[in-house]
Image 1 (cartoon, helix red, strand yellow):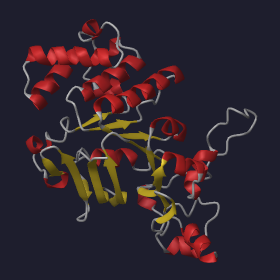
Image 2: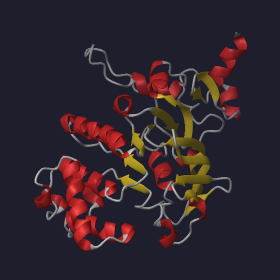
Image 3: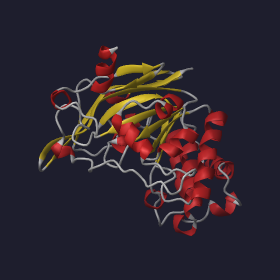
Image 4: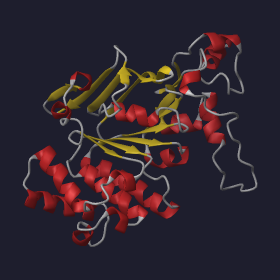
Length: 333
């Protein structure tokens, strides 16, 4: 595999009226071309903030940690994303090497400008191609993602499209610049199950056809099981477990991951009640000390979980989890 992205010690805080709060805490991961990485966790876990950090899209009150390193490996050589300062410099990354599908396409497209005009404009900015060629590429991409009568849809506005078409148009727009990395932020949210399946199949085809890497953000482990090669589980700004999808889902080692899996409905037993994770994810202003999951954990070790931040320990193969239970079990053998 060809290395595409390295994220090392990503720490991100926000200056607010209540003080400086931590949104992402010492997150590290790598991504290869042609692979899909699922980033999973409840709302408020820091998934979208982490993804936006790859393009430095977070607001002006964001403060990155001094040890943060984000390196994008392109054909011309590595790009140190954290060293890019001006908007012009960031064009290499934003909409160029990295594209992003946002959660709500209705809010992402300008309502008073046609879909086609927005696609043409971004191609002119990021690739320098003329309007005629940009139009041809845009219509071709709309057709590629399964939008029928693409030349007509090209002239329409976002409010004239159905939810599934909006999402496909957003994907077409993201792909038209031929990015190396695609960030998909909850692309199946608010879509019915039939359209969800179509979008998931489309994402798989994109990896095969374009050889790009994808970071797929969702709260649904069921979707990740169908889509991703690897998965990273996130809670309150920290990664708590990561590995191949098969390893993490079949032999999950962190109590939080176990809780996410237990909360999934079972189609083979519809009478089984859902098992929610007790409590709510805390505010970043009230981060628990030690393990950030200790105040909701059903198997907490007490004082150790409160006093010590767990580090990643190997489980099996590439599978690792940050939980004191793993160390306790290893020491007991």
